[in-house]
Amino acid sequence: MPFNTVLTRKLGIRVPVVQGGMQWVGYAELASAVSNAGGLGLLTALTQPTPEDLRKEIRRCRTMTKYPFGVNLTLLPSLVPPDYAAYAQVIIDEGIKIVETAGNNPGPVIQQLKKAGIIILHKCTTIRHAKSAVKLGVDFLSIDGFECAGHVGEHDITNFILLSRARQELGVPFIASGGFADGQGLAAALALGAEGINMGTRFMSTVEAPIHHNIKQAIVDAQETDTALVMRRWTNTTRLFKNKVTEEALKVERESKTDDFSVMAPHVSGKRGREVFINGDKDFGVWTAGQVIGLIHDIPTCAVLLERIEKEALEAVSRTRSLYNDVPASKL
Ligand code: NAD
Image (cartoon, rainbow, N blue to C red):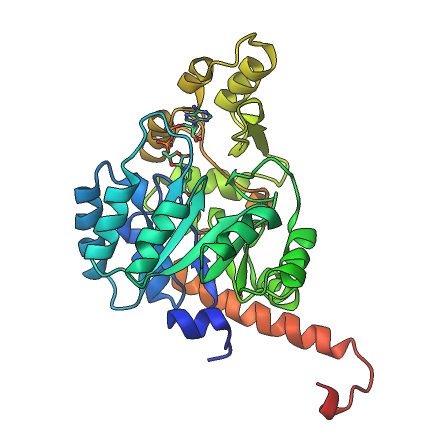
């Protein structure tokens, strides 16, 4: 086992890679495949229409892997506000040991989960929010740079700054999220002080991701310039794959005279985005993708991907070492 980080030890995983929560992607097929490959797979709670459906999905996932997996619970503005406490209760009742939380006002849910002894990995896009989460007693932070897919926050700080700020300030173990697709990225994150990485978009383009092949191919064909930021006007800036619907949404955002979210809702609705993954038409609705889209060139299985990442990370470390002259063994 080449990796020995706080994350691998505490979660009981072999490779320090977490598959981040992804709406309409984080089903049992993907979470179990990532866990079977040695990383930490996560079910995305709100992808299940009700807490009872989440219970069934957790049970289904258990039949697909004997390794640990977790659940993502995201607390962000929603067209139909979910009953977060009820989702959290199912997570507790089903004996899940690791939860990735994200979003606004996470205090009550984190408290509820912590009381049940669950390990909390909280996602943040600023050091200020990370410090508030530390006060809530989270076990790990997932530091999410501006490169990331989906909810990028409102401060636009990229990971080169954010990760070093996390190392300087937090005093709680953290993983790096946003912009990661390969072992070189993992080695860089470890060098900056992280205990592992989170990947979302990279896992969408794997054999096991339960989405239409056309979307995986669209990711392979895309470049790092093919994302767009929408909803800044509503303080909910979100990085999406650039397509016809994001262009429409951006036009509405620029030109509409009202701040009422109802002008935006038909364009960014998750229902429409979900259809994209089912029918394979990349222009049918909005869907999230990170700038890392430019680094993804194939559709491997999760096992092949994580083995490759492990190998690349070791090669990157050995390359870096070879760049230092005559370092005495005592200094390594
Ligand atoms: P949805 O159809 O409820 O909403 C569509 C988009 O509009 C989302 O980005 C949402 O945050 C935003 N939105 C809704 N009401 C808003 C308001 N009043 N002001 C500003 N923005 C508003 O979204 P969905 O696709 O059904 O997803 C349900 C929830 O899961 C949303 O909160 C969404 O942001 C979140 N989500 C989670 C993940 C994850 O990684 N777990 C990924 C993407 C989205």
